[in-house]
Image 1: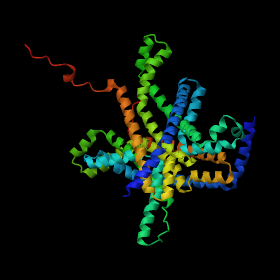
Image 2: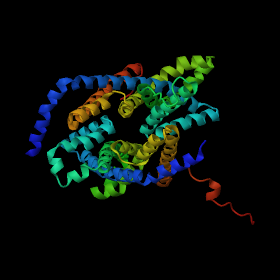
Image 3: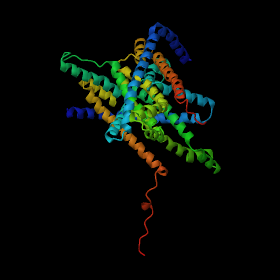
Image 4: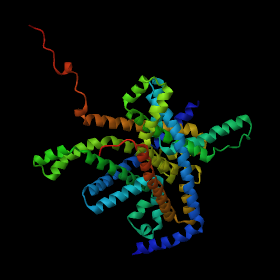
Length: 248
Length: 243
C-alpha cells in the first residue's frame, strides 16, 4: 500500500501549507479570477451585442465584419489572443512611448497585465456572446416585431420595449455557458502575470514543491466556481421567464 | 511591411505544424476511445457506471484544461509509485505524452456527452421498428442506432475537434515547440509579437477553417435524405415532341 501511505503523507502537509498562508493567497486568487471573469464578461457583452447586431444587419459590409469577428476569435487558440494583446500591447505602447520621447529608446513600456488579459478574454467571450445574442434575437417571434412596427414604434422603441427584454430573457442559458467558458479561459491569463487562481497555484507549487496538492486544490476551486454558477444561472432563467409557462 | 520577415516566420511556424498535428491527432484518437468507453458505461444502465461518468464529466468539464495539464505533468510525478513505475513514468515525465493524455481525458468528457445526447436523439420509432423486425440487440445497434446517432453527433463533434486544435497551443506552456511554442520563441528573439502572432494566427485559422470545411463535407455526404430534391426538370426528361 505504498500509494496510500504516499497519499497520506501528501495530505498531512496539505493542511500545514494551506494554513501557513497559501490558503489566503488562493482565496485572493479566486477573487482575481472572478474579477477577471466579470470584467471580461462585461467587455464581451458590449462587443457581443454590437457584433450580433452587425451579423443581423441587412448591409453586407457589416455582416462580413461580424462574421469575420466571430470566425477569427472562435477559431484562434485562446493563448494566442492573450499573447497578442499582452505582448502586442507592450509592442504598441513601447513604440508610441518611444516616439513621443516619454521613455528612453531602450526602455520598454509594459502592457498592464490585467488590462491585456481582460481585453483578450473579453474579446473571445464577445465572440461567443455574439452568437448567443444572435440566436436569441432570431428566436423572437416575427409577429411581435411586425406588431411593434404596426403600432408605429420607432426603431429605438422597438429595441428597448420589444427586442431587448426578450433577447435578455432568451440569452440567459447561453450566457451561462459563456460564463463557464470565460472562467476557464481566465486561467490562461496566468501566463501574463495576473495573480489569479492559476498563477497563485503555480507560485505555490513551485515554491513549496507540492504541485500535486496545489493543482488539485486549484482544480477543486475551479469546480466550485463553475458548479456554484450553475444554480445561479438556473435561478436567473426561472426569474426572467416567470411569466412564460411551458407545457410539461 | 517587411515581407521577408513575415515569410521566414510563416515558414518557421509551418515547420512546427506536423508536431501540432501529432498532438492533435493522438489527443483526438485516445479521446475518442475513452469517450466510447464512457458512453458505453453511461448507457449500460448500471448505477455505478452512471455515477462514475457523471463525476468524470463534472470534473473534466468544470476545470480549465491548463489545470488538468499541470496536474498531470507536475502533480502526478509527486507520487513515488509513479516515478518508480516502469509503465507510467516514461509517459508522465514526457511533456508531449502528458499533453496528449490531458487533451484525451478532457475531450473524452465533452465527447461522451455529445454521444449520449446523440444516442438519446435517435427516434424511438426506428428502434421499435428494428425490434419489430426481430433484429437482435447488436444488429439493431450496428444497423439502426449507431448510423443515426453518428450522423446526429457530427455537428457537435466537429466543434469539439476545433476546440482540440485550439487546445494544442497549451502544449507550449509545458515546453513543447509546436506552432505556438515556436511562435513564442521567435517573438522573444525578435520582440515583434504582433507580426509573429499574426503569422501563427493565420495558420491556426486556416487549419480550423479546413477542418470545418471537411466536416461540413462529411455532413453533406451523410445526409442525402435531408437535402431538397433536385429540380424536377433534371429528374424527368421532357417528352420529346416527335408526334
